[in-house]
Image 1 (tube, rainbow, N blue to C red):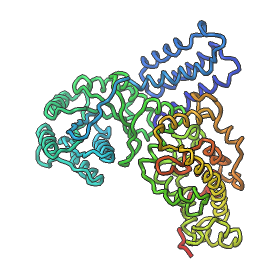
Image 2 (image 1 turned 135 degrees about the vertical axis):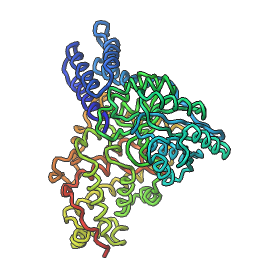
Image 3 (image 1 turned 180 degrees about the vertical axis):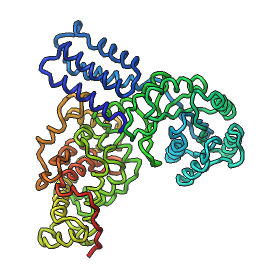
Image 4 (image 1 turned 45 degrees about the vertical axis):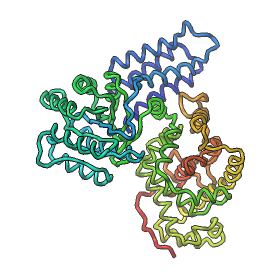
Length: 548
């Protein structure tokens, strides 16, 4: 993930300071040096890093500090605030309105991902009730119209382009006029990639802009652009005067600091970041949430919004939980919902402290463990799926049959049933809690939803969410204190950081999570259980035996 190494180094530097017995200028300077080195190595502009260093030193002036001030807390807050300033130009981006035509024009370098991002943005607005469409004004690159046509067809978005017309100005003007007559709310114009040395193409870009008079011009920046970002973005700003930036390919391993430098150089806000190849892999950018995830402090509001946007069907599970019941089928449905949420690393980044605990556990390894759990439950009969799991205790031969049918081991089947027992026990407690919450009118659907999310974020940070959290504790230590899951010691997990985590207890303390957005899956608990599946280290895919 882009900037992941940067986040780890900054978090490590601040954590080292927090663990120091005495915080003096020498320790403070050592932390600053490490943070600045990390930023420069991540391709952040040297001038920006220098300004950040000066700002932090100005905020934390040891000579003027009150003796009673908590120096560690002050330094942590100063680092967090300055990192937010680095990506927040404090200028509001354009907000489209329904009932009128909002023209959005895309510009950027070749290969930055403009065409794919155009479709992602159109789909994003379409999902929010806007009537969106696409215009292909890229007549320079071979296959550009075919690519846009394929993406638009897949996303069911109307499009306009031409195989024969070579004048991009004419194509863009005709396309925009056509969709304006048809009363589309969002008209996105895709243009050719170009760089500052191509003066003719830059002049063409200005002509397109004059022809379609966009309400917003967006520059698409590849996260791997590096130090060239500042010069290129300034050249585009002078010619096209873009009002927003979208950073793409943030799921790669590039340093990513160059794109941040472009924000500061042009004083232009980032509106979205591309997190993958699929149409849903586009996240709205929020400076504080971005830095919070970068430092391992999570983004609870983003997690809730993401789960709500998926519109997961949880009616049966929620009904069972309210009744204090949790069947094996409910566990199967929860695992399926987690698979729909996207890469585990993305979800872990939204839960405070969990991204650090994942360590080097890859998405493929985590996904394979989830799949193997699903294979096991797919090999059960309808009666077994709808049971409370006691039938397996009464008749252990069922586990042998399921292991053979799913291509897994008996130990793995036992671990899945252990996970189910833990979740069933929690469901009984949550059923009582939800009944009490409904009586009191408490939940995540009330008018004070934002305050509840903020309070939840603070509670999670105080439990060890990262350097900005009031508690400043260590999440892994908290998990150790809570105790491991019964029967899943994780010894066979090959050092998996999930092993031994009782995430269910942690989620129980956070409260209210199951009440939001039609019911949020107990994600952390599921992840914790997944890590404890000691016998699931194998990478070979077992056969999905039929139900018997």
